[in-house]
Image (cartoon, rainbow, N blue to C red; front, side, top):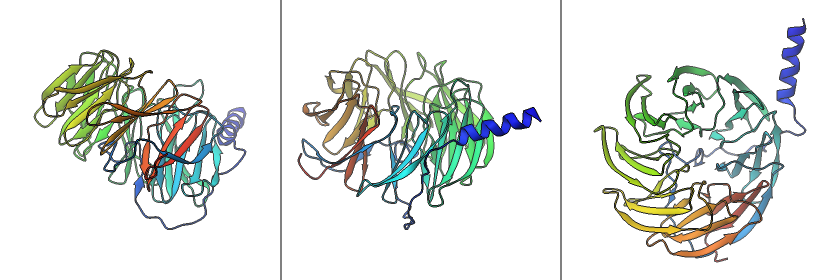
Length: 380
């Protein structure tokens, strides 16, 4: 009887909330920035041209601070979590808050969005595991909840209407849209990287330096590549080449179909954010604040610039500008062609969120749970 009461008490604590997240019904368009990096390959590029400065049109405030992640957006809504365990929804056009749901833990990665449901992970406080939650924001109700064996610092991945999670213990989970697990696979390789996929394979890095290449169809590891140090960045895939960084500052381009390292360069310091790219360049920053742009085919350096603070948030790359947050309360607008710093935006707190482009807005965020929404077409 005591055990039953303890379980009930634990559920009540995990469910504890002072408000609810409930969105007015609207048509579901199926488009948007539905996961960190927008697509399974993780592409942080938008084919737009922006002015040297941005016009701030709206500022939103959360009750807790962010991790280094991003908002997601779809159906005219912004969704985001915070480190105090709240998940929020806002209207992109008006800034209207649709409330929040509070959990006992922290939400340190971006949610994922499919239709009328959002999916997110709550890392339990002072415990080594986490909970995957499926939530219907039109009904304001949980659909499902699943206990993961490890905590999660990796961004969620949507692939073929399935949600994939890799926990910090190296176990990969495949969930359907109702939040039920379909299968899991244990690699026994602890990791703090982030997975990406091109529909053929899923790739992520391990703490022992292995790049793991996993076949979703075959449900097995089909290849590995050994980096010089722990893989600490997110992975990005383009045309069967996986770009990623390690703990000693190496940036790699590995062709998984040919099982061949295309190139490797050392940037001088640990890389923890995601590489970004366009058709010809790959750009990566490190914890010394050095940002390097290299040619995708050769790895040859095109330009390099050092900014004032360390780089741990992933930038947004546009047709002309790289928007790079740093930990020293700034976002830099850097000329993507030559590395020239064109403008600097100053914040009261550390810039934390990867800038997101959605419906002609650019959405960023800083410490203490502040979200900034800019009109990119208007010169600020």
